[in-house]
Length: 185
Ligand code: SF4
Image (tube, rainbow, N blue to C red; front, side, top):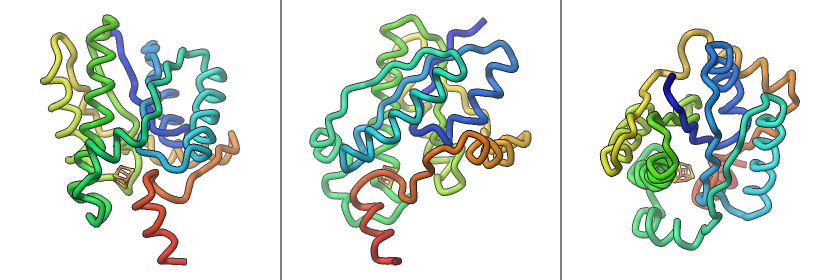
């Protein structure tokens, strides 16, 4: 049985994936690493929804450090004006998944997956490229590149969001995605 670390961005994106894994006797540990989220209140709101779902499913959740200043410096700087699905997002995925891969390698996990690609707003190829790259930077961790939008998982995700009354955020996470939303309103 593989030991899976599931990098998680939020409860809605985790919902169907976690249920799917548990139904197949795969019990991952959730790794909440999202220093991209701004402001802090939003980060905490999403984190507490993730905790609620993890407790409901009986799985452990590990929280990474929240250092938004480091994320701005190391992932976003110079890419602030990029559109969503552009170079900033690829750097953001690489940043978070590298942290997850390092945690996995240091704690005996052999497989890494993420909930990031479950959203149709994300570029699946970017997420998979970032995940494979992150795993190549450490020893003994394989990237699980399953398409988490198939096999009815997208529909089940939408059902679970309603059933469990999850907070469903309206922007991706960083201040740049929030500003874009504000210009649309
Ligand atoms: S839009 Fe989302 S994926 Fe892209 S940089 Fe911002 S938080 Fe990261």
